[in-house]
Amino acid sequence: MRKFFTSLFAFVLSGFAGGLVAQELAVATGAEEEYIVVFMVSVLVTAVVTVVFFMAQFMVDPVMAVAKAGKWSLIVFAVLLILLVGMVLHTDASKDVMKRDGPMVAGLILPGIVTIIVQWLFVRWRVGHVRTGFGRRGAKA
Image (cartoon, rainbow, N blue to C red; front, side):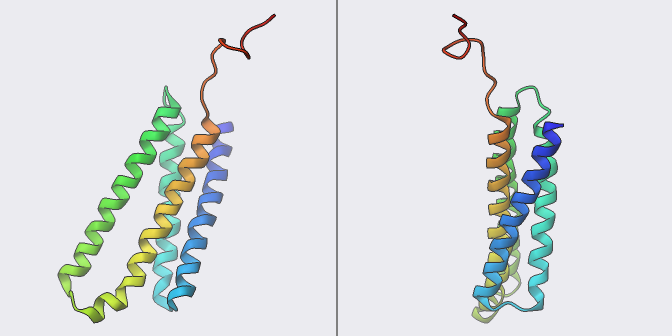
């Protein structure tokens, strides 16, 4: 039950953080209706990352699994976004297109990164390290 609530709270917390970053970018860039895609992608990234970290908690060594899930989630997200930027540059690399699409690409990148990092930090904190019976806490006098 602890793993479920950890994932639920991580979902809410990282979704809030990613949505807040997307909202601030929308206000800062004067975005209009097309920015709805950014909010939808932010929710999608939050849901996918929550499932990944939820499954990582059930591994034999959950601390290592959460660390690897965080690292690989960031890597996969970065590769997908590099492909997206490459596609935008390949189709039409004029300054007008980059000026128009720049805020949208930044809106796809930054909330996703914030979502992954917040999710990783929260789940890593909740999983914690397994304590052994050695040391001051384990010793019974």
